[in-house]
Length: 156
Image 1: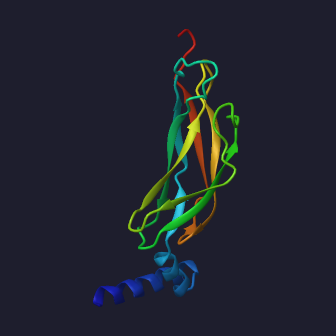
Image 2: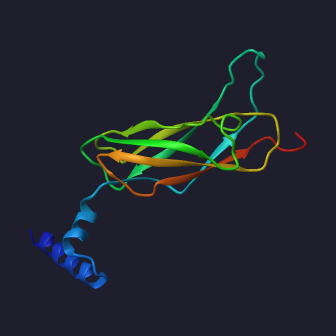
Image 3: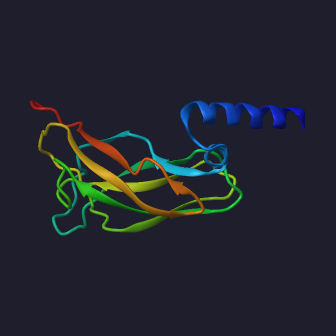
């Protein structure tokens, strides 16, 4: 009880110093935030030789979606990809809108991007993943940059 009172007093003092009402500051401490980290790296490796009529074999790249703290309810979020120097369908499979979830008690979840491998040496390419909305948490950092690094080097 004593430490809770001390926390409330300290929170009120800090809030007063920065000009935020104490109730709003406490709400920020209690709220669960879902967000992307800022940077991810995915590798594009040489594709396996397959029959010309076979469907492409995409490489999977997991992108972390984190919570500020675990919650006892499922957090469902909606996301999409946006092109940068990486081109949809040529470098990665575009996601116009999809849902992901973080299980109760967990502090992170993952979305899987599909990278399109080729045999062409290329410089780094990037795309953006965007959190559109969430239920069970407030959306924090909405975007994360995914860099696709090519493992095919010139001269290979």
